[in-house]
Length: 244
Image (cartoon, rainbow, N blue to C red; front, top):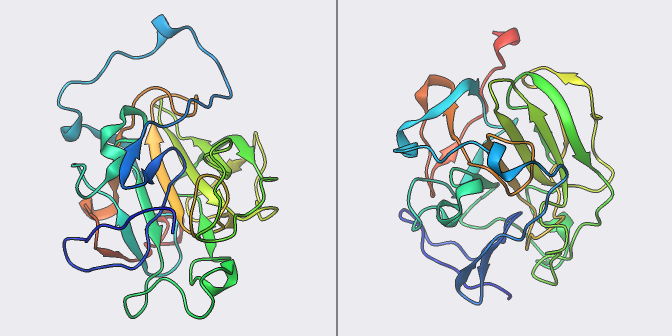
C-alpha cells in the first residue's frame, strides 16, 4: 500500500487516501503541487485572513452527496485534516462511503469494489461552472496515482463573493456539466471516481477565494444548519433549497 494509515478519533480504518493536491506519502504530508489554469498577478491576490478558522463562506453549502458518506479528512487541525497544513485547501473534506468498517467489498484492486465508485455527485450550491476536466483516467486502487493531474476530473463552480468550490476525483467521462453553465444546488455534476492523486474512490471538496487551482486561500465552508463535521463523522445528504 502506498500510504500509511492513521487512526481516526472514533474509529480505525483500513485504507488511506491521497487527495487531489498532496496527501500522505510514506507516512508524511506532501506539499501540494502547483497546478493552475489561470495565472494572475501575485500582487493582486487577496492578503491572508487573520483568524481564518472563524471566517466562513458567505454562501451556504450542502455536501455534494445524495446518500450517507463518511468524513475521512475534515477539521481544523492537522490530526483530523491533513489539508489543514496547506493554505489553499485548509478546510477541504475528503469523503468516502464506509460500511461495516470498510470502504470496499471484494477485490480491493478494482474500483468497482468500492462503495463510493460511480455514486452521484451534486452541486453543493448554485453558481456558474468555470472549469471542468473530464478526460483523466481512473487509477487502479492501491496502485500508482497521478500527481501530474492531482485533482483528476473535477468541477469548479463560481458562487460569487470570490468563493469557488472544487469537487474533485470524479470518474472519467462522467461529467454532466460544462464551462459557462449555471447549476442549481443539488444538480447532478458527475460521478465519484478515482482520478488524479487518489488511492481509492472518494470525493474531495473545498472552497477557495480564487479560480486558480492550489492558489489563494481555502475558506471554511458554511454548511446548512451550521453543521461542522470532522474526521470520523458520518454526513447525511441535505435537501437543496429549491426542493424544500
